[in-house]
Length: 262
Image (cartoon, rainbow, N blue to C red; front, side):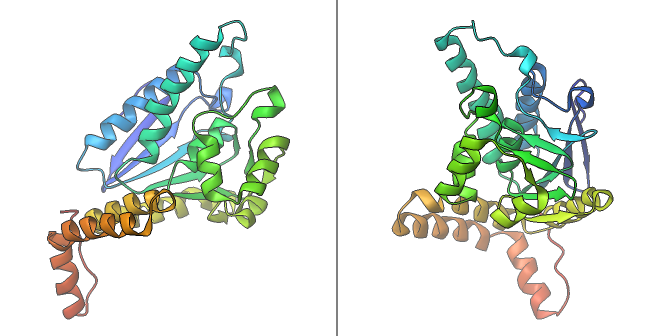
């Protein structure tokens, strides 16, 4: 699957690599890029051949967030609200709820909504030179794209407030220390490491991984009884899968399992 324009997609060995491709604009999210990302998430959700996703940016940035050139203070409150709601429902939430493991490779600048998109992924790897920030207030804006939701699931509330209120820039190392980033790699090793992780997910027990993702995404907003019920449902499905049969056989035969995602 390939998308022309501002998003490049390559599918191989069960892994879809999605590249935000506006390098001349540091992958700022203009309307075209948002619309094409929404289409990519719809296609990937329906593609049974894709078992994991890797998201990164072309050039020197992952994404610097919303495209300032397309922001219009005279647009009107209601029009802006509708545009922001559409953005969240079509671009951010489908990524966060994609029924496949998603790895973000933050290769450079990630600011505002750009960082929000990374936070919507399941695991974030970053290059040593990456710079991250919640830069909304620095240009007189409030957070959007459900970034505040994603941020407060990654860091304590008081830390989220400090980062959002100040909009200060974080090194990759500080972002890792705060729990925003999972691992930091030398710049020239980032994509290889992120791809290896994502390929590992693509070769994994897909049904079990997706069930785990769903329940972990819900864990902080439901009661223990509700989570136990969700776990029971996911386990019931996973236990009847071919991957579970393969896992049992591999364990008994003392070999590495060969999962097919079924």
